[in-house]
Image (cartoon, rainbow, N blue to C red; front, top):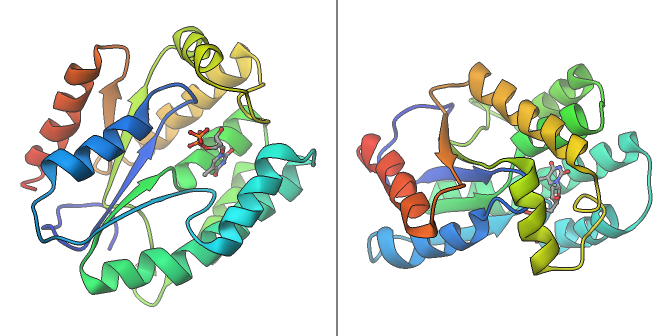
Length: 214
Ligand code: TYD
């Protein structure tokens, strides 16, 4: 259940990184190009992934709110997502590819906004509890990129949401937050150098899966 080697199918892979690191296109590529035919693939995201959680996402990304409210809404969305989407999918033996999961809360709300990590830890234990332990991804691919480069990519690509509007110092803290989570769970995390050309980034992603025998 926790991090470790687990044969496909029936595994949970999360994708993390600061805004602009380019993870979303690699989720698509993995689903299209790498995963074996005949395996059920569930592509999903956080906050979001169910009708209720997508409604909460709209609020979190676009309405002003304090950081405790933000954290509570994100974990409420996560609970619904786990209950209605992720846990049933894993029970069916699907491969779940999830664009962000709770590491993002520690990186963005914790390190970025300065919210109490102990409270986040409590929310994590409540929300991700299962009968056999704490639900975590089997593998977390962390797309790491210098925040100044990421900011240039975001500026060129889209109208910024509440997070993307933050300054570079915020994203430096978020990056440090991801580093701390990776240091705390090295068997679960793989750092991907997202500054390289797209095809080299994709090769690192595939290599990380192969290393696990997947
Ligand atoms: P993102 O994956 O960047 O969506 P998009 O590619 O459509 O912009 O996720 C939306 C934002 O939500 C992102 O800026 C990070 C933020 N976020 C948190 O602050 N905490 C969390 O726990 C999660 C899951 C996301």
